[in-house]
Length: 288
Image (spheres, rainbow, N blue to C red):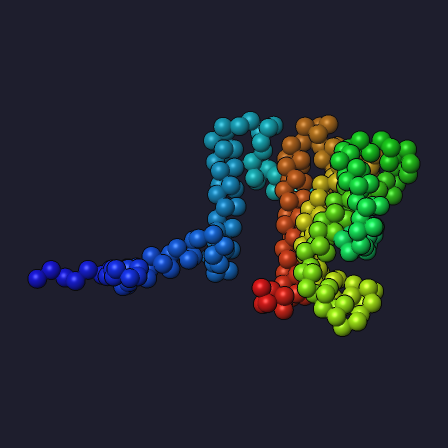
């Protein structure tokens, strides 16, 4: 007599049995929005970077690409080691981190209250939002010569470029974060007799904070881009400046090394902000 099949189907319901349960578990682990274990997430992420590094190593090792176009990983690492040993890399890192910190903090400090204001009051939205929309479509690159004219070639010029590149985007994104606060929350505050000021500080802003934090995290990535743009012109130090100097002497190992370093710095700041967001807004995450 043949074995009983592992999957049993009934006219009134789906198939059951160990095979069906395993298939359901696989769908749950690979479906849209399905969670995966942190260890698996890290393993996949590391594997992607490892595959890209291996492809780079093979392409340069077999001389499929000329070194002037794509230097080997060893050449890049050696050059970064030399720049670190003579203090050049550390000097460039300090200059760039200082500039992006100040420029980003100034932009964020102004964008948060303005974004909350126009996201909460329609009159202020009518007065500010069209102007912000108008300016944010202007290319930041076009402001570089003007920024030099307005503020010279000091760090203030770098702050200004970072500000122009991030502030206007932040304002609109924070406005959207505030508008996503459920109207029932605001209605509850009115039912309790709270004035608008307290509704903003006790209900709207705390409810929008997780979204605002994500906005800051995303816009920080843009700030790194505008930092390099600001340092490509009229600078004497910084990661972007070193890339420009290296271009003149065809030092592609330095260029690629600094580009990779920028990616590492961006990834670190992004992951740090993401981890801080999980700690600061843990209750919101559990509620969702």
